[in-house]
Length: 139
Image 1 (cartoon, rainbow, N blue to C red):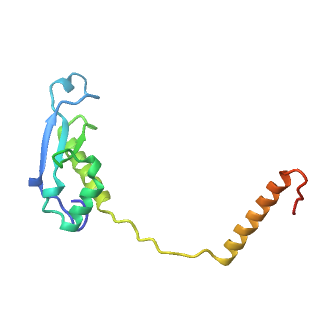
Image 2 (cartoon, rainbow, N blue to C red):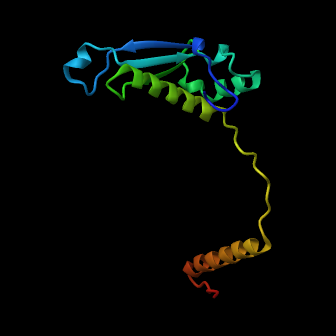
Image 3 (cartoon, one colour):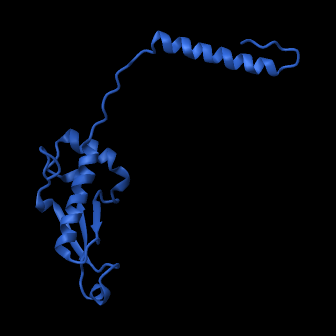
């Protein structure tokens, strides 16, 4: 489950198990505990057309040439925990990709901020004019 509206069906996910490095001693050489989870957002039925377009745009750099998003996990020594971790990673990535930026509301600078900005510019100009030979300084 990605969020309240979007749930990726299990049949859209492809899992592969490979041997991983890291902790585990000799067990690492025998057990394929690393999980590689693949999902293709372009063909997913979990997303609406607008969501799919948005997600493909946001995840463009993370997708393979075939349009797959690959998430791996080898954090744990056992396969079931890595499967759960990879699923959570995928959900977090898709959840982040689905977020829309908050629209910017145009604001105007206040009268006081304009006056402070102009006063600061005048002070700075006075400092610079004081560096010139024969220049007068304003305080």
